[in-house]
Length: 138
Image (tube, rainbow, N blue to C red):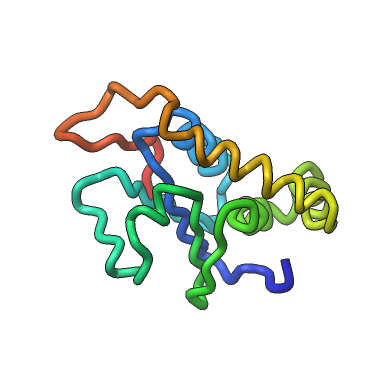
């Protein structure tokens, strides 16, 4: 990843997806500096037109937009999220490894596979008013 994100980083996730919501909730619990802002794209009031990105693109893969409106998608979005934790050796090492050309190629392939099957994963059933939210909101 050539540019480090400018925080805060807006992370767009599908709150109706059990795996997606759990992953973002995990990162929010680690974020004590307010560097991440989670935006649930599954709620009716989410308007993708504000970001000039179709909802189908948001639904297909994880998106993150930094303070300078740079857009990170898929694996790059995860790398941007991991950079929100500069003191974490775990995420620093993971970020370094995943940016290596051969590893990055395989990470992208794996993520694309996950993105394609994500629609078939179980959905959250604890939704109220048609909206699913993770426990910690920003």
